[in-house]
Image 1 (cartoon, rainbow, N blue to C red):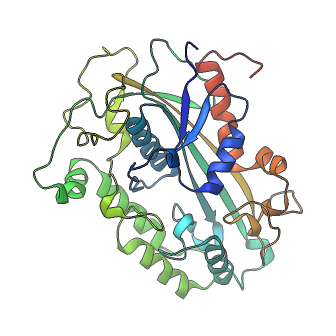
Image 2: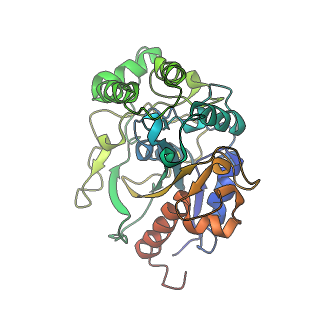
Length: 339
């Protein structure tokens, strides 16, 4: 590469940033984070899939900074709880959720579930978006995927009433219908092995009541809302100067350092990783974060929080997703097999 590029990790969660930075070690990029860019707004994570949310975050961070952005989103699906907490894993126990309160609520809901019926699945989706990839075909290594995007900010659309932006995007596509379908599926409690069904319905109703978007501690009113990222999908053979779409997000604020640095076509690389396991009856271990102390991977006598850093990275959902991103990036950017 002619220049040493930056990769901006699209998160302000210091625990997650630490893991992402460790998993990026050895690649010839300067790794920084959203914390290094003061004034950057949050993004409303209103997708119904973890990949949709990861791409939303990466798209905005790439736009704001003008640098490569790497974002991830994680879900925890518990079979007995009709796949809850799913995409709400970070704020399962409410707006002021903590790691401890989320784990405590999950264990409480499953207090009477027998050991043979406590299966769960972690899943992470990672999105790498380069807003100035330059010329090239950028092949990637499967199972990672590649997509080209028109620069959504190539033209600006300003709404007369900014307060109506959420309704504008919902009317534009299928966002609202997708959300309603998702909410209906998560409201149908089909499992019956002994969890606290009444309390689960209360938790579900609370999380679903306000509609999609928002995370614990996030000021949704000031955050940026993006519609379905597939709106700007492009063919790699399209003319670089072709209009991206008849609609676009409002122009980036003047303080965004990447405003003038974007190319017409952006490169997106995506990958997912999953990990099967069981929910324990009590927290075990002091390493890791989030639900790690109550998640025991299949075939392991230890929870994720009882593993060393390297042991966890080798098997975890995030480790698997990032390993696939790494392989894809090495091939796409011609970094060589030794990286």
